[in-house]
Length: 99
Image (tube, rainbow, N blue to C red; front, side, top):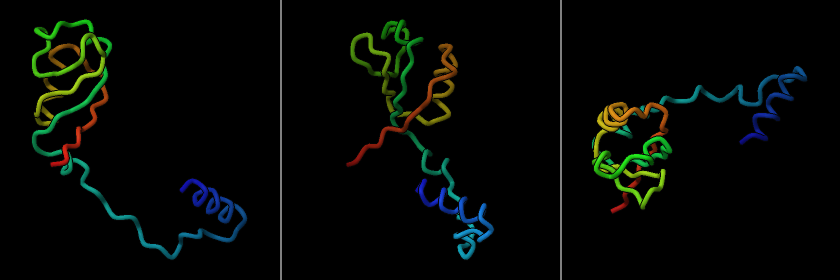
C-alpha cells in the first residue's frame, strides 16, 4: 500500500534501512499470456463515434456512444482493425466473461 511505501522511504531516509530488506525480489508475471486468444475488448473513441455502424463492422455500441465493445478477436487483430480505421490512441480493456 502507499502507506507502506512511505514508511519504507522514511526509514531509508532516516538511515534505518529498508523495512523490506529481508524480502526476496518480486516474481515476474507474463501479462501477455493472460491476454492470449480471442476475447471481447472495450474501448472509448470519440473519433470512431462519428462513424456509422456500417463503417465499423465487428463492434457493438449503443446509438452514437463513444464506448465500444468488440466481437471476440485477438489483441493483435483488434489493434490492426483500429489502426485500419485511423484509431491509434484508444486504450483497450479486456472484457472478462464469467461462464
